[in-house]
Image (cartoon, rainbow, N blue to C red; front, side, top):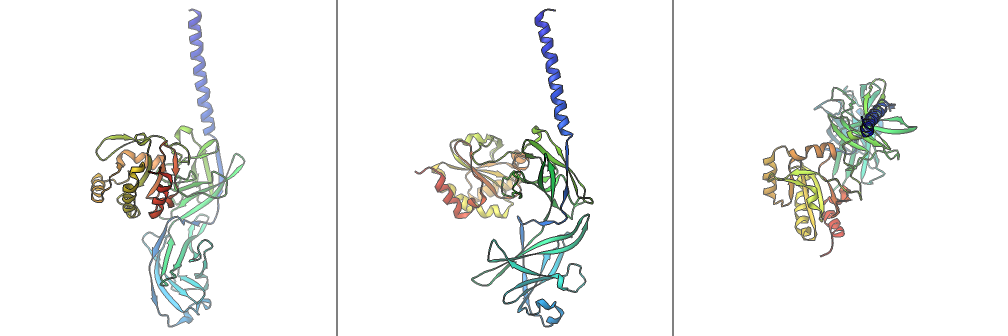
Length: 409
């Protein structure tokens, strides 16, 4: 055996030792766990609110009401969805005085409305047209004894019409100590499911930037919705997911994850969007990179989605108006039935490229983690992200945006 052979053997043995050490180092890090505690109060989910109807009635015997609301001049009745029970509704009485609003409910269903079951609505600090309150419904899930329901009222200045909305979902918050830093976590609370707090289903959030809040905006790296998978978050230089939540003790346990397990595409202003492939309606395999040189609006939508359909006429108008200035749209469709998509696109004259859902399902659900529709973004000719603010894609705002960012003719 000559010197060259010995050097080869030495290199092979060194490589084996290096790979073994790397493997053990990675798995040693995976053994690290972090623990924390849930707060005892749930928070209503305000991202999605649901409207409900009321009917004005006359109350003859006001003495049956708590004293502080007996001077009400108008009375309305209705039903809110009871988030404690599937397909159940909870009757309520809404009262209007010259200067105040109240809502009275019977959460324990004993047909008696007590003083502590009447809630006054306060003027919102964010919108003076909105009045709001939070009802507290009794529950018994481990440390959680009350389920909040956010109620909002908006009164039109023009005709006095009342618009009521309520929250339906709730979140549990908690804090976990990670590398000498207290980090805020959020978990969707679902009293309908077998597991009220899940590690693989529902809403999840992590305060990554340490500002004390969890951003719920589109493409935020701090939140996502999971459907049968443990979401992984990128915090500083580590990757973590939740391995256990104990409803009785309130303990949260996190674990380290490998970097290659992190599938999320991080959508950041000024950062180039990674290329991806898809199949269009003609069955042709395509790539995002084909659109280089264009300003592309990537639109996650579906014909099943009411809000998406509402935006289509505006998108058609924008496409016709700005296409000659380098504007393109790539529809990321989420319809399970391909023929439904074909029929809708043809009927409405949507001339831009559509990606079939069966070719982008993983991209939508695991890479971009889309949980609200429609959701859009715009990339520039160089493939870098330009716009992710969803308000800029609505109605006239879209036309104003495109006129600003596209080259003049």
